[in-house]
Length: 124
Image (tube, rainbow, N blue to C red; front, side, top):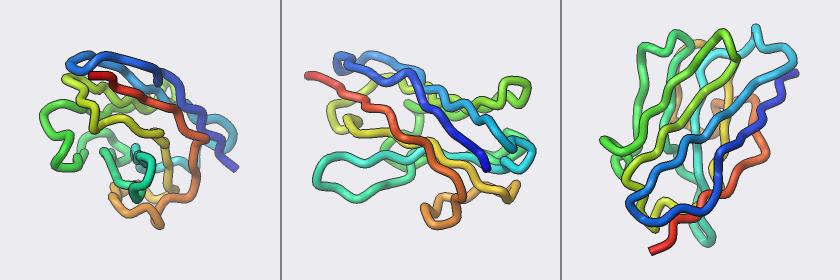
């Protein structure tokens, strides 16, 4: 089993930045690609960014391209989401997810492990 713990959420003004972290523990050798998803009140969960096992391939939702960057550090079993130029529409609970496969996916159903989520609130 793999446990994922997110951190770094909080309250920030529009235009500001936050960096989310997600650290995996347990059977981390079975952790492949990882992703960040978010869910805002009254809206469906959406993918924010995903990264493959090597860290060389990543993909972003159109709404965050150029503003968010996903990265990972295998030595720390951690994946990051650097969020710049935050907008009020970015307010949501952000979830980290991991899948056993090494290839990246933007599909919610293709992830095997999930964190508990961290709240990001962007004020105007």
